[in-house]
Length: 468
Image 1 (cartoon, rainbow, N blue to C red):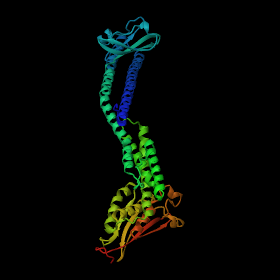
Image 2 (cartoon, helix red, strand yellow):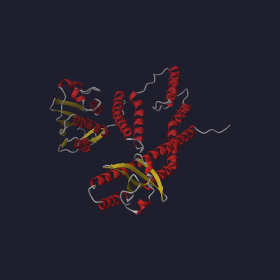
Image 3 (cartoon, rainbow, N blue to C red):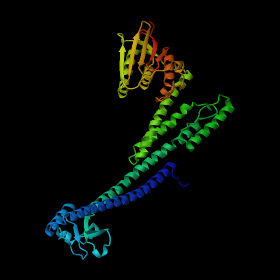
Image 4 (cartoon, rainbow, N blue to C red):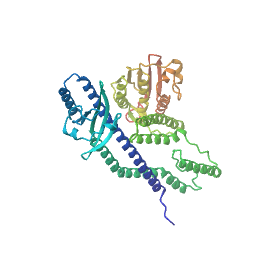
């Protein structure tokens, strides 16, 4: 059997070949565009030089011939290294040549100049651009000519071509390696599907092959295999219908979209419009990821798995650490954040440090969002013999009294003015769930246009873990 290349190698070869051809076409187009641009710039330089010469000739008409010749010589030496001439229609020079090189230069024949002409001539082994321009000084017709070497433009073109040719092997290797990496990454789900399918038997029909949410044929293949397994599982074991949390399924495509956009932003060849589009994708993916994380948190709350591990935690230290983290954001929004702790700096409660920080962060984030700048946010920790109360108070827009009973509902936004602030409406729902898991009370009081106060009341414990 004739050995065949793997799909990865074939994709790599195609990718490298297409990139090579595309790079050659791009390089050729850029070279011709660069040459045209440099030639246009040379024309503009010579044209401006002749315009200045016209102004000079018009201004010194009243001077003597010797003075006019001296002015022309000075002008030619200062503007074009002496490669400039003024001819009469008879072919004679209106002024003496400013330098021997100009006299020996192969200027175009006046008989061939009926209008302005821009052409390339060769002299002494070099190429020169010559601009010839008819001009009338009063009733006297003249021909103004100026020349400039092509060597500077040629040097730029040669360097561009050298850089283009030397970069081809490097870029070809990089593109081939990138193509192989991407192809392997794209085909990795096939290996996963194969490995998973081999392990599934009649005894473990509940298992599924992994699905990568890419929207391509591999996803459809994996989904087809899973659908078949589900039908087999239903027919053989008559178990519950397989369901998946939609928010969990979204985690893959959102992460993939954000990663692709971030990688594309590092591409130096991307134009400004593409970069802005990729930046928007990254920002929107981050917002979607945050919303997804909220949804997953609430999904875990709905499942009530009881996997929260509570241990003695110094609530004062958690509050102080969270406020220190929030000071930077407060400064960016021109808010003043103050923290008041009681004399007792060891306030022990049963809790999870990560979830406690998240609870406080949600309350602080709401205070930042709904307090017009400059605002004031006060955080305090008050203690009694059996309780510890953390209060976050702001002087923001407040919440209408009619909306207070619903503020813990998911996706609920109190009123249109609060809806103008960016958010998902899930923060307080998550805060309420965290407070409930810690057997704490979350209370919210607010006065519209005056501010809001959120208080979380925890049960204190002794340092040994026993209630006082």
